[in-house]
Picture 1 (cartoon, helix red, strand yellow):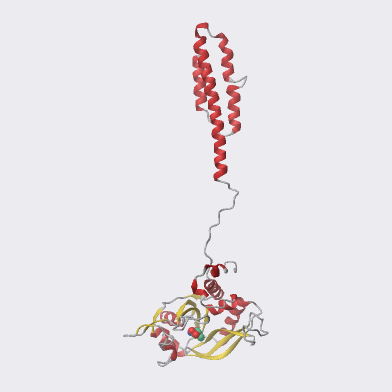
Picture 2 (picture 1 turned 90 degrees about the vertical axis):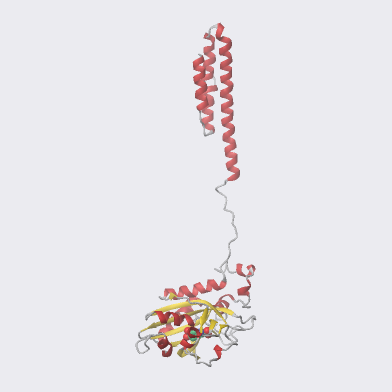
Length: 341
Ligand code: DAH
């Protein structure tokens, strides 16, 4: 009998139950009327009188041991599920923590790059601190050109060569052409600097995307088609373009491109000053002198180039009235563009 009691106790000690149903099964197995402990009680009748005291005590101890064990299991289970309920609710939405929004100039820069990437252009970049050769001389600027003037250019050093902050991303053209033979088809995004008084309409730094395509038999018609495709992808399929003759030292012939005003659809409004057109970029056929300075034979190759200001395109898309907003890092302004996408 004592052996039986000990065996039962060991059995109960080792018991594990992970669900309320399993605990209830244990209760029935050990404590119900037909359970193991009750069976021992029934056997108790046959215990010799001199052992009744000791065995009775042991059976009682076993009974309270089993009862305690089952109660403990019950408590652990309900405590566990309470804890789970309070700490992890898998159906809840995750806590949102604020992430930054993309800068409007980055949004527009990426849009521009993606449109040209779809037409086979790759990205090229160059340094913001440049020398006179890459920004001016190689691009056919005569020595007395006003753009070289202190009024326009930030010089860093003037001896032995002029070191300066680039005033346009056309310098990247030279850097790529010096190192690569055609075909060349690149867009060059980047920051440029000019010595301007800061106001709502001008800043001492801004951003440009330069484009360059050099190959055999490249014509002005190719340029026009690529720019029309760009304008319609950027501003909508109804957008029209017009090219006005212009002058840049590095292109001949040169043109400035207008798009039909995307505010009034070309009817004429305050934004386009009633003309129905707004200027968005400069372009032209790469001057043979430029090809020559970069080691490309103008008898074999021709090409076109274009350059646009990212701030200007962004203003047309999002109507930012004051250029200074772009560099003030006011998060209320920047956050507006998260939903603009
Ligand atoms: N570099 C010119 C500027 O900063 C823009 C430009 C005009 C670039 C005509 C070109 C171009 O490549 O062909 O105003």
